[in-house]
Image (cartoon, rainbow, N blue to C red; front, side, top):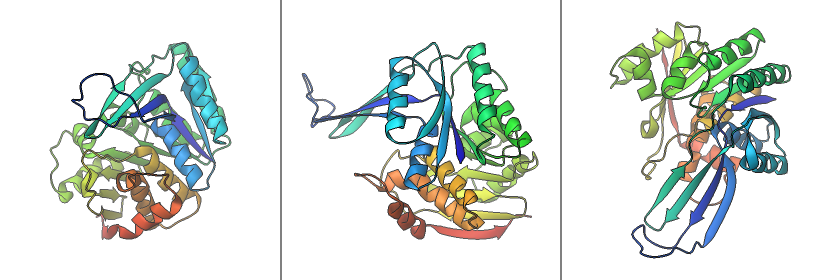
Amino acid sequence: MILSVDLNPVLRKRIKVPFRKDHPGALTPERIDIFPGGEGIELALMLRIMNEDALVCGISGGYTGKVVRDFLDGSGIEHDFVEIKESTGEQLFIHYSDGQTLISEIRPRLSKDEAAVFLRHFKENLNTCEISCITGTVPNNLPDGMLEDMLIMSRQFGRRSLAALRGRDAAQAVKGSPYLMALDLESLENITHLKLEYDSEIIKACRYLLDKDIEYVFVDLREKGALVLSDEKGYRVDIPSIGREHCNSNYGYLLAGVALGMIRGYDEETIFRLGAAASLIHCFRRSGEVDMSDIKGLMNKLEVRTFRNI
């Protein structure tokens, strides 16, 4: 089983209205969807599509937290959420005929006692899972070093830990030496204090992370694909033209594909091809539910070049 951590689940409401953004007066929606979000939860939902079991470990609170938990129960996804005092946040997506608007609540805060309880639950769940995954956003007041502690704990239990984070959270995770670290180019630049424009520069910058006992570094280059590095080998992943603006990689989907490949013993190239395809499948699928055939179809369209990383 794969352990997926979500420290900031959200309850999302998507409202579709048949008007332009500048439409005057009241708006009558033609469709309303309510569903949970958070990249840790999305990781588990993607693994369900891939026919692999996952356990979501996280925090939730209030009525919105209960709705999230009930949804996972109805989807057959096992979960272990620590109840916190503040309510799970909400997000509102309003889809117009010419664009969309996103409104997000402030992330709930986590007390020191609640953080300690969560860490106990996380430690217990490592006993039943082969791989731990940490992705998504976290509470703004998350105790310093908590992400690092979770990754160190995974290593002590002999578990492979996969982390896909951005910004300050990515820098914190690097200190915990995950088995695989996925991050965007901006986060890599912030960690190394370098401006990176060319593949050769990115490859050299990844050496800084590999020297910290990280086995694999996955650099998300958005519409330009990805670079994946280990001590001896590298992979350049090129993707087809997306044709959609502002469509970013989903790191929950990315780790779902990578974790699945590792659990099932796929070769390296297939693992990273699967992860890259899963992370971007929503950019190529405009309507309807994604299934495994969609991901396999995109995998076959990716161009992957292997090179020696010496």
